[in-house]
Image (cartoon, rainbow over all chains, first blue to last red; front, side, top):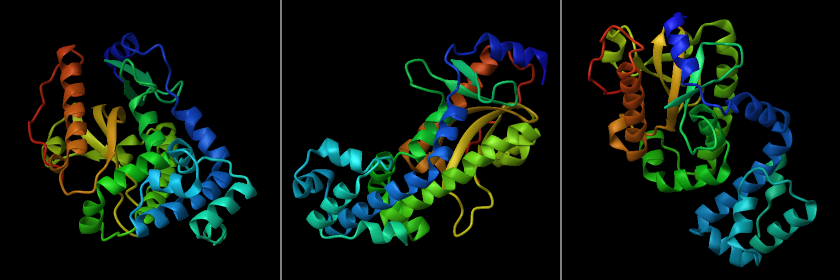
Length: 101
Length: 183
């Protein structure tokens, strides 16, 4: 790399370092349970699309706030078995089958 | 405009870091591509493009596909700077960029993606052989970047970064060719 280019980039370097390595490491270390969490969220997305529902509609059906639905749909929620069972019962869907498939 | 080195100790890969933003452009991209809520909103908003260009009907399939592809692309980005073969990951954005020698606009994607061509793009300015500054990226569902606002914005960011570097005298040679139709 040309010294002139490197000097320029270093002179214009942000004080805040990149988070790329740190973020990637976190995603890789948590890969398995994140896939399970996303599987549950994907089942809800299918239900939303099939029935033309919004996050607010899902919130009403579950009896929770839309913010809580956003949390459920974040794909990185560490669900309890109890909360999964509640989602399945109130929406009439089966999340766990899709996750384990 | 500020920059960050992506991998400490390696000078090949940099990214733009805008003031006021939580993180740099490359880190932001992978946060978005692993953010379920972001992808949900994006694919519902761009469902017609998804159907017409990729023949995918279900938003959940698009989200799953994006997350898997992003994981693979992330591994490529992590591996390539160590091998000093970034030129294998990035390709010129257009024929005009292919002809230029310096400050070319480039795109990276998972070139070996199975099922269908990857719709994830990382955009960067190639400042020297194997040296890149990432300016952003996008989920590109259309043939050209000009067709959609979110990809046009990325094209503007590429041009703004290149102009900034030129204005600050980093490069001696004017190799700019104003042609931005992506292949």
